[in-house]
View 1 (cartoon, rainbow, N blue to C red):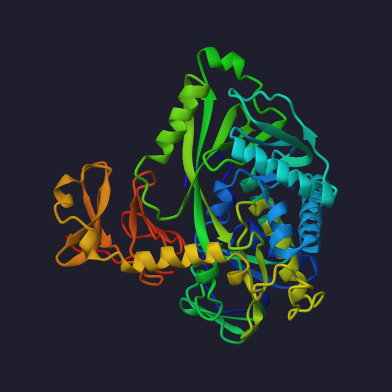
View 2 (spheres, rainbow, N blue to C red; view 1 turned 60 degrees about the vertical axis):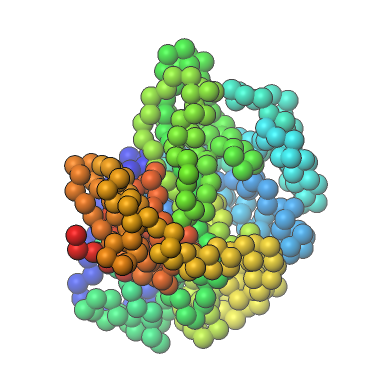
Length: 500
């Protein structure tokens, strides 16, 4: 994935031996690295296993903003869980921001870390009313903010709230530093090491090797172990489309200082987030559930927005970010299930991974270290995966199960056997081929690629994503490139190739 972040972390070797250690962290993104960071600081021998490259997945697609003003969240938290839980989440978020800031400043980490103001805004009456209700929660929680009367945004807004105590940075540079720190403290990191099996007691089979550990932390974005845990019922994946650009022509002077020292987040479903990255502006938006068929190009929506509001511009890069969404707005951190005493999980960051990855990593690290009871109930650990989230938001639960059921029911009757001849270079589609559901595509040179359009994770039917040129699973968010290789989990197997 080619994102705006231009820093390549150091390379680590692939697992090549049996190893005995204190803890194994599965996943080398921000959450996995922070988990290992806390453990090596306490003298534990830790191994981090990453399927691709450290930080190359969801972390690389992050806008990397640290703030406690996370969209419309506190009013829903109070409604779903009560005031005490909302206060705890706010306190944990502020503590995570303070800890990350202290680490970066103390260790002099070169990651383009800067203090910013953060603005929530809406251009719609409905959004303005939602922000007003959120202000009621701010008063209950003691959150300070400023009501703005105008912004530098190139369009009018209905309501704007500004918050201090926010920061932004380069996530890959910070990932690289954490990885270096882990190794210097005696930890080991292995890249291009895909884990497919679940731990069995204190053993984990990875390819031809056996790893032994007292504890395991699953930090693979979407948990890859289906049973026990059943996270595929309580989590779904959501995508945002991003573009880095630089205004040109008349807009070059007008927007020269746009977003310098300030970032903007629209709470509207069709709104955008804006932040500065060096001389460029990063725009993030057009949210859609992974695998939802995009009838209109998401990037074209961004292009139209830029043309209408920023005039002429130069595109630097475009990319897609993907997030795990829980049904009750809280991330998961704790025991993977009641049946696994030494396996822990961190997931479900709800689009705020830079703070929630740190919060959840610290929770599970403290459990591994014995600082917290691993059997803590929801009152003691508000992030417990064993909370009854399925019934906290019945509408979300029914909607999620409905999407999963619809994908299973989406059989060969809805594919067009004639589409194959109409697939042009750079395009793809799901077709009926020799009696099977097949993902067909042509690369830019006209070469045909065929893969099974059935997700190897749990058998859902894949859909073509014309913006990313991938085949995506609408049930649980696995994604595959045109050759069937995994782009995003939870699938641990590539989609099968089909002979042409």
